[in-house]
Length: 160
Picture (cartoon, helix red, strand yellow):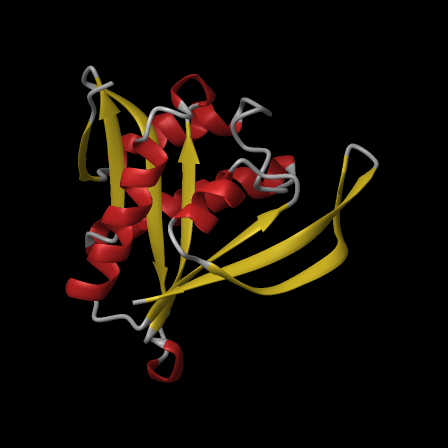
């Protein structure tokens, strides 16, 4: 399947809003209803710094990945990486390509030393991150409850 990747634009907020309205798409993000609006505005806000990429399939956004840059000098050598892929486009290679491109962007444009990803098991992200040589940093049991179920939090890192 062919797709393109470009820098995200503020207009990509509409895609994020659509994805966060779909429980299957946003299962890695345990935001409450009130938190979602602020979280996705913050997420797309990094597009101002060219720290966000949008995957396009047939001219339509199908994924957004963002480096959450740190504002303080002591921690500016790392960033958190967030990625959301339309469930209809998963397992087509877009997620892999997005993470690779974001890691390259982190290393070359922002001169970061590492990127980390936080997710809640079970997660579709875990096999992808393992394939791309992310290593586990820690696992915290019963970190979040969604739909009455406790889910562990996992943080993985890739050193650049």
